[in-house]
Image 1 (cartoon, rainbow, N blue to C red):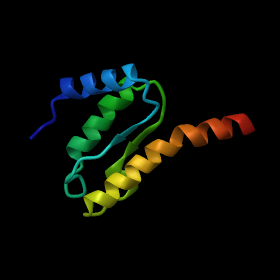
Image 2: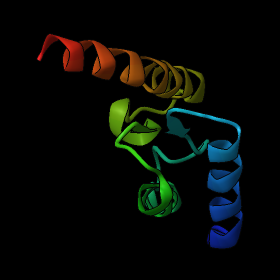
Image 3: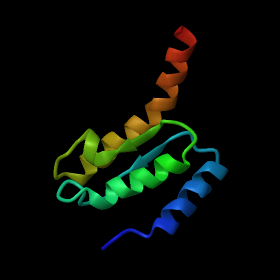
Image 4: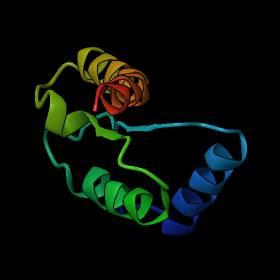
Length: 90
């Protein structure tokens, strides 16, 4: 079943309005078919103001959704922190 692209755009707008610095995209069964997760990523990347977007099926392409979701969330959490740190080092 295809994703509702307008819902994704609304979610991105909401996250931006709440001051989110990064996004984790994680669909439960993306290990088997990542098409919808990747389309969601494309939409998020078009609307998100920075490169802090994590995709669960790319980071850990395995069946266990808890592990994939945790890795995606942790990656999204540390991206702005590491980016700021590296930027200050430069």
